[in-house]
Amino acid sequence: MSQSVSYREQGNVVVITLDDGRANAVSPAILTELNAALDQAERVGKVVVLIGREGKFSAGFDLNIMQQGGKAMAQLVADGAKLSLRLLNFPVPVVVACSGHALAMGALLLLSTDYRLGVDGNFKIGLNEVAIGMTMPYFGVELARGRLNNGYFARAVATAEIFTPETAMQAGYLDQLSTPETLLADALALAEGYAKLDMTTYHATKIRVRQGMIAAVAEGVAKEFGAI
Image 1 (tube, rainbow, N blue to C red):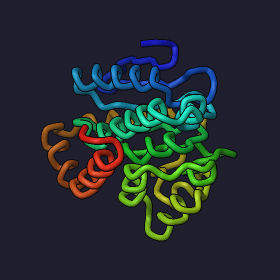
Image 2 (cartoon, rainbow, N blue to C red):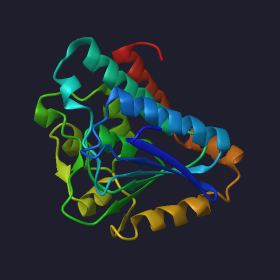
Image 3 (cartoon, one colour):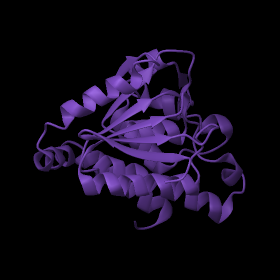
Image 4 (cartoon, rainbow, N blue to C red):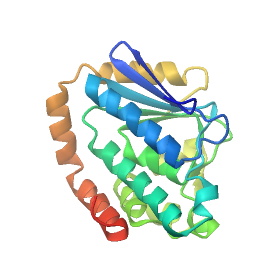
């Protein structure tokens, strides 16, 4: 792995850390590295904890590429969409330790995973695409529709409302709040509990639970970017 994505195994858990030293912008390099880490986690069959650098989980897609437009932008968004779909289908639980700000694709990663812990503090969580002049991709719309709580969907997507960690939990981006000091330990404890599940029946049941949302997200990816 590069310096941006690290991988380690701890007991029954794999810890994947995103830390590019800046805002953890989702770039082609980070997507490649993250998928490689997920490949290894899938090979060993251990529950995944995905954590960002202190104060910043991810600020979303790399703006340097997004501002180019054209094929480079489309490819980056398509690859991000495919990562979300992979996480929705992942054969073991994926626990996110959201270590701070999570915007745009960073927030979509929260919506793509199984259990989301955040940290209380002055952090921004949400889908700010419309606020920065970007039409929300179809896959993001369907992720938000499937995971956000009633009453928050249109506010979050169409009007780009940004939430604090506490209100993000109410909206459905997060499941639980921890302190910065206990975030990783809490995520590891949760993941160790999940590791006791039978993963074959877990995965089969997760697919049944998410069947409609997975189909809608896959359709959104195909509609915008072509067949996967």
